[in-house]
Image: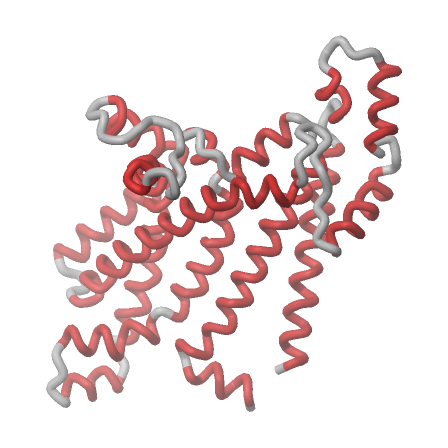
Length: 317
């Protein structure tokens, strides 16, 4: 078990290292520099060179990366040369927005998808199952960058039920906070509903054909009890994996939704930093998201043992 855990940690560190290196290399290929952004269009080449030297941006790329990596290992992700704000402070300042958006999107998707999957698996091949499958196909074909404008037009501009843009913190007004995230959450949850429903429906139908389900029914247990107590948990094995992967992806992938709805989350921070050539901030956000993604996937791996006892037996064998 210790050897397995060590291997997982080693792979996780390698992933984080490669992701941050990739971000640095890609940003280095873009034209311009942070110094030119700070000084403006009228800055002289001498002034730009002097500021680059002051910020350490005149050193070779590998030297900048090694220096940054040494500080990052100690928890210091550096300071933005543009805003002069510590990167970790900027991340924690915007993280609640992204976390709330991703968490609510997954919760909404799970609740709806599980309900639809149970209905589909209970009556497979029925008109209800076919109708749900058609609805799932529609959801799957509507990405967030299409769903967002449509939702804004229908439920913000036409009806005025929800705000078009803006963000209110939970501590300031819970009602306004929830009112402001309804449309973004729906926009990011549609494709998640479709993927969760399809996966769980297939696994539920397969589980309901197992012998132990037939034995439970033969004992006179109600269909609802059999579904909830005996079928749903072992059928959630693949779903948990997908949820973990998608949560990590959503935390780093809400860029479009946050930009469209003007939400001050990590996605908006990344876009601003890339535009301003703020390599230090981009590196910090990338490594933070990579670590979160890796940790979530490790938690998912550990949860397998609770969902399926066979995994515990295999691990201890």
